[in-house]
Length: 475
Image 1 (cartoon, one colour):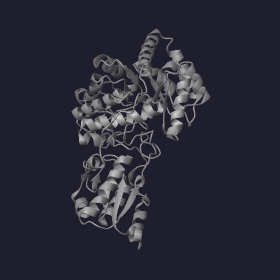
Image 2: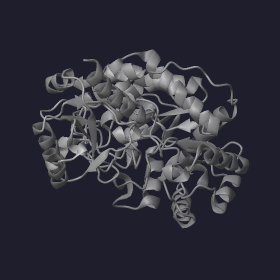
Image 3: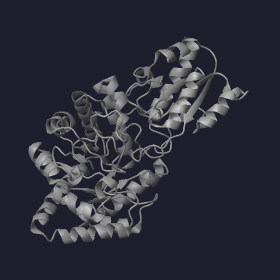
Image 4: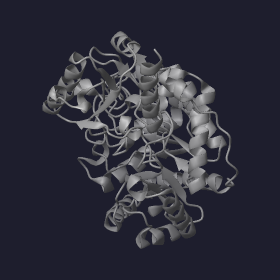
């Protein structure tokens, strides 16, 4: 039963029990931030995986932006999808995907769980946001196709996510079971449009989402829904590649039934490769294998299991046929390109036009969603001496202090600032002191925010610092 599983594990070295399973038929591994200490170590880990199974599918989340695993300790050097969508230059989108593919091939990864092609139809979505190319289905569709096409042309399989579309939700499926309330026509014409574009572009895999779409299936999450996965994705849209589940340890999939039962139900629904989640133990995997073995005693599910095996084997065959190849040249967005799409308020423009002076950079402490993890972000990746503030009392003390740190232009950077009362109070205090408030995760302008950067990766953070400091000197 292990032939349809894609587990994760803890630590920077390949556990012996995982190696044994790879030798006996486990098709691959998904790597997470916890598995990565350095490029050299990661390459050695991928080599060990492939020594155990030369045809191994080695997957990772490398979206080219806020969600990164290769650059988990320093932040991604690339802008994410929200920036690329606003630039609306397919060559630059393809360039980022090509650069990501070069990075992945260099260390041995052959399946990237990207691109995100969810429509940003709900601006307050807590888990998609700047990971989306935008709110226009056609824009998302063409940039998603450019991204996956370039990635696959450079020798790495793409996996578009999260079918049938996670953009119109206000809950995080890592922690809850989100619901999309749009009618069936809207779901098909808006949420699904980019996935049809991915199918037309021959994407290798599509990832499901742990969301309920009542217009298609009243109560069952998409990952566990035969209607959504088999009838809609495979039969109606004609997808013949590999359907990969989002991680089954997420509450949206297994919160009420447990991972083993979620694995059985996702297979029955039409999913092919079951992503079990990070930090799996041998006992965890055994429980899933036992549940699957019992379930496939049913002839109908046994046939479904054989179909999943064929799809996974075809993907492995295609990946095994790809040579390592040389690095492919890629045109990337410049810092000027990136800050050229920032939305800047009149207040910020006026403050910066005064010129001169120094900048006191402030980071409003926040916890990222589980998809992003604990990746460095904001001005701290570009400048030393950034002040970390997590309470209105701290900002009050800073503003009243007769010290050098309270001098110059205050620039406070946060993520989804207005969704937190505490951060809102801090932002108000900075604004009243004549400073600038920057939101690096919000996707729509709101009163009280002076600059929207549409991302917080290292590339975007460097562009923000460059923009503010250069404007102060030159205007």
